[in-house]
Image 1 (cartoon, helix red, strand yellow):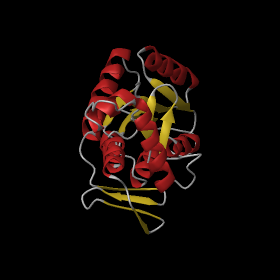
Image 2 (cartoon, rainbow, N blue to C red; image 1 turned 30 degrees about the horizontal axis):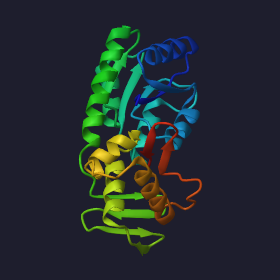
Image 3 (cartoon, rainbow, N blue to C red; image 1 turned 180 degrees about the vertical axis):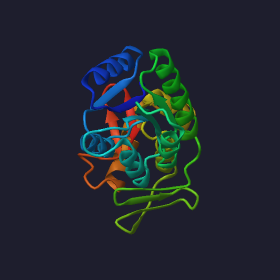
Image 4 (tube, helix red, strand yellow; image 1 turned 45 degrees about the vertical axis):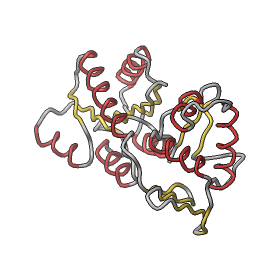
Length: 228
């Protein structure tokens, strides 16, 4: 599954060139030409990486960076700027950025930075999550306790294991075959339909609207994805 990247850049030429470069290298790219749109899109989707121009016409890349970190975004953030002074770089890092690239930059350097940041993000996603809140639901894997609207929810062992697997790989599409291998350990007579049924049960128990889920999502033709 391609890594999901949001590019926020107000210079049309740079936006087009960078977006095309990333897509040509296999990444799924969303774009925004101003800070408010970028901030809204960052909150609507689960991205592996945000690439933020510092100087935007409304709110700065620094402000977006600080806001998404306060909202719980734990993916990578790369700042793009025409400024090269150390103080500007420090400011970006202090607001929650992971890396900083000064314009004009070489395309190979940009791709190298992106690749390095995504490797770090995907590695960290595998760190076991002990407790997470999404929507009106809470999952405490350490205590094996689950709730919805403040009321306890009973999950079967495989439902809890499936949920934890998806949470630990949040933002990434997990193919049914991989889910079967990791959660059901390739047990005989267990098919992809088993995954579908357990997903439906989880949605019924934890989503506000099981028919239009916001967190336990289907990637049509590919598998399932958990988005916080």
